[in-house]
Image (cartoon, helix red, strand yellow):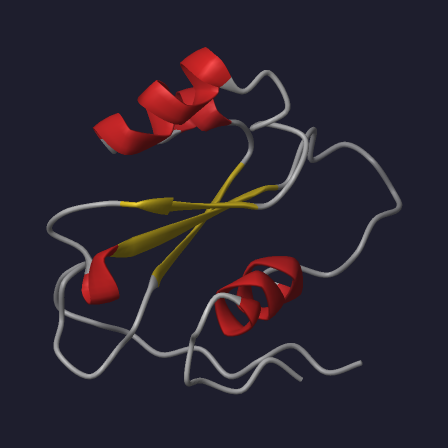
Length: 96
């Protein structure tokens, strides 16, 4: 399956987008306080794609897409899982 189209933006709250998809190795690598708060109450936040309310980002939604260790030689291409979850939670962009 093809990876969704990506684009460069000038900031996380740029108009015209309905979510910010953050691709990181683990939640600890992300500077958004909403990610730290979610990881504090959800031990699986680093093992699955998560969507959370976040002020100051596009659409008020942050989609965390953890990659896990980058030394693996398997796994689903990213950022597809995050794009699919954003679409399922009301995103208007293409996920496939």
